[in-house]
Length: 104
Image 1 (cartoon, rainbow, N blue to C red):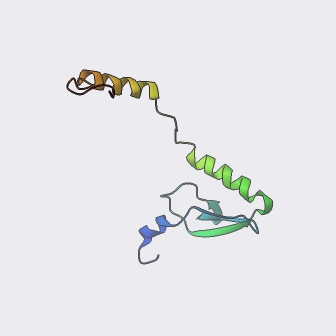
Image 2 (image 1 turned 90 degrees about the vertical axis):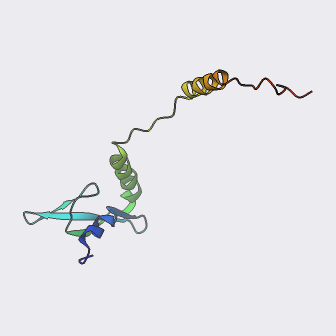
Image 3 (image 1 turned 180 degrees about the vertical axis):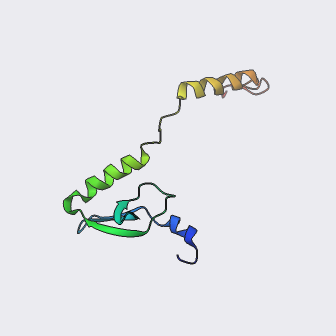
């Protein structure tokens, strides 16, 4: 990692171990104090492990929610997609006139 410092950013931000219950986080040193680094792409100095015991899994889910909070997930508008598809089919002459529309 010292030879290719850019590869350090490929390392994980967090490592959660449910049993026995601890988390390893990126740490940056500022003014002689350790500060957790949140979010990828930021420089860090070291990793630090913290015993979290039975709180490890809730902390994991909370961390995932914090990391994904900026994403906006939503379902596609199926009515709009259906309308567009149906209009394209009708405008392109569907069903073809030279083929039967139903089996005989």
